[in-house]
Image (cartoon, rainbow, N blue to C red; front, side, top):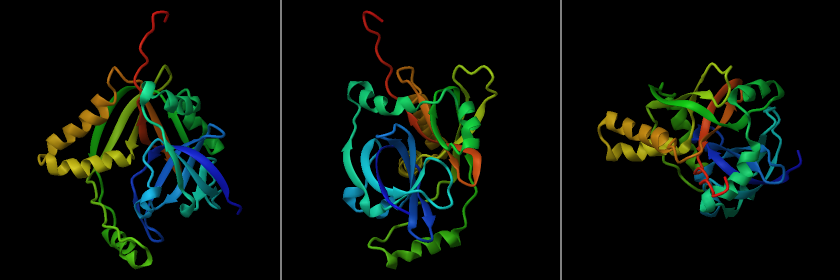
Length: 262
């Protein structure tokens, strides 16, 4: 299929997964600048990219891509990884004004409404949650043999990747939809690369398991959901299980200060 070039503000980066074809891949998503719509970019072997292509969150990138053959989700695109170019990074000045001007027009009224749109193949969204609770559960270890086979392909690539340490916990948000009286509540797994990397690095600083988990909760609940921030969840679903969504990231611009005339 014909490649088209997309310009995208990257807002979320999922943790990498072992891959038979690429050693390891990430799924990234964001807002297409020209249309203001969500877009999913896959597969991105992020740690195998050239250094000048390894974009941080809130970068605007240019990438050539095409619609995948099997994935029918309206936001999904398969990329040509060699075409990735970082155009610029959007910072946090003026209370995240430029970020908000791109992200918030894509806001959905609620997660309940996003679920209703799954029948139309919608699979990404952003919404405002309420009554957030942070939960931790143990995770089931993945097939170590398949994992090792994926990373043993290093002779096919310019780089040799060291397998990332598996995180033995799963993290969740329980919440209700903001201003949605009919919402019965939801529980979604957090699938955010920043959180898993925090666990790996903080594990050496906080050797006590309970202290480590408390520090993660402090960051991903109390700090992000401070009364100073205006908080939104960015979510995406699983290709083969379209009703199964995960929190891919938290968008938390500071609340605007009231003016004299507000």
